[in-house]
Length: 533
Image 1 (spheres, rainbow, N blue to C red):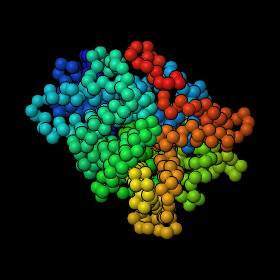
Image 2: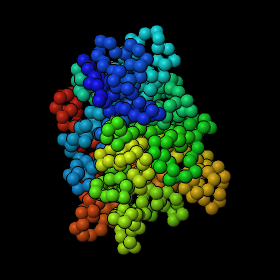
Image 3: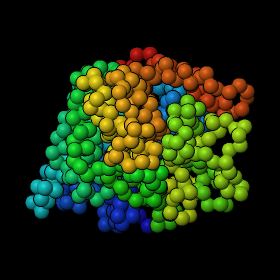
Image 4: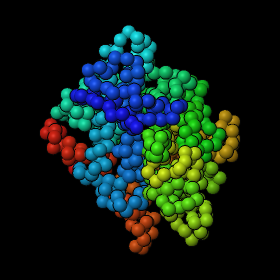
């Protein structure tokens, strides 16, 4: 039985113990019977600082962040696939975006919980006594700074300028102080500041406990991503491409990371809680199945975005809503010999007798996202409510593609960028990543041609990993691509066809940014709504 944690005032980091238990090798492991915490006695020991830090991390796994909503239910797949979950029709998942959508509000509030917990830890960690070493303080501070920066990065890239408290709230972690919106550029500057400070404090990746813990490699990689976003819409700071390349190169030049020779194994590892930090640089950790001693930090990876399987199925595949469907454009983007195609887009479905190939008359949109297959899970029983599968936040393949993009755009030349792209292509074709192959490697591309190829390669490699919408936005391609996908909606009244039509037809130019939730507008009169909302 879990003990109740008593908390007074705004310091609530320890509350997440109730949802942060894990396996013995999992970063989020805690023993809740030890902790009955009050504000007056907290932040005094290394153990308490570590628990508070886990509270900052735990927001990543919340229902309205990577624990559920971002996995197919908020439109982040954009043009690579669409949502088929009629229960959510009329919501943000179908691009019916309104200021009262609960997923929108709760996503906003979850990210600010992360900010609040980080702020509380950063503000109070100096209360710890001399038994906490300076090295330990530095590691904890670096992780808290990075995570605060990451939560602000998610906020600014989705809502634009946002209130930016850098101190703990005085009432509740669910309420942002009465602050005006900070403009987009200033929020990004703060993100860079937090992450660049963190880069000097966190551990090297080969010394951290798991890929769920922030390392220097994770910080460098996310800094590359942040700079790419700043280089594109809406800031258009083109000089940032060179900076993005520099950060990505730090990961590459470390010499530690490599692509797993098997694309399939990357995702089997996520299902089985196996860490391969050479490929998977940072991931959200989930563990357990929601029952008994395993009632801990399970998520919805595979339930939302897996191969559909009935709750009454008896073949052990694991229940899945199968709500993420591929657009035919994505399937055609792969070469026939690209090993990623039939893993990203499952070539079979689950029938009463087992796995069934799709009949020749079936449509590509009847297939499912295949990256997160519950059949690979080891935790039994496979329940209908939670899965132990981890979710990738940064993979080495992404770093290679970010390096290629940053170099190509800053040098206006494909020459030095192509080797990084070709590594990703080689793995996709099942050949030695480090050895050149004239039948696979691209050569002689212009900068413009490589730009187009990078955009397509990011879709092939990173589809269904919650990155595509923001990629399209920063490239200025979002609205055009969404409307282009309408041309392949089948005619008829099938609910699958209706989902596809609604998803792409509902998208508007204003959807490059989400509105400020109406609740927040009501409690904070200093806020101004985004244009068009």
